[in-house]
Amino acid sequence: MKLEESNLRDQFGFTLIELMIVVAIIGILAAVAIPAYQDYIAKSKFSIALTELSAGKNNIENDVSLLQSLTAAETLASAQWVKNPTATCALTTTAAAAGVTSAMCTINSGPSSVNGKTITMARDATGNWVCSTTALQKYVGPVAICAGT
Image (cartoon, rainbow, N blue to C red):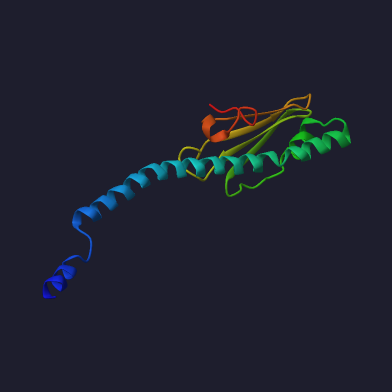
């Protein structure tokens, strides 16, 4: 009886090698998961910035349809849908001619892969909108949404 009791006492706990194996597995999983998470955050920040920038297209199209034509000054006034920077974007707008405008968002938060990158939405005189960005295409999504580098 004493011998069995002694063996039971010696079997409690984990060995050092078992603990090291567990720590190594957790380290490998973290090494894979953290970059994937950073890419996910970069894609979501880009998506937020694009949404903030795209929101003002309706203002311009509404003004164009109501007034039939806009002067460059009216186009610029209509294009300034967001005058203050948001949590994601520092916005600038320009109007070169009647109905021709562009708005640029400089992403000011997020991972380094998208921080400082720009998204530009440009409208030509015929009403076509073109989106371009300096961010890598893998953070943007399909080229049909916005053309990246």
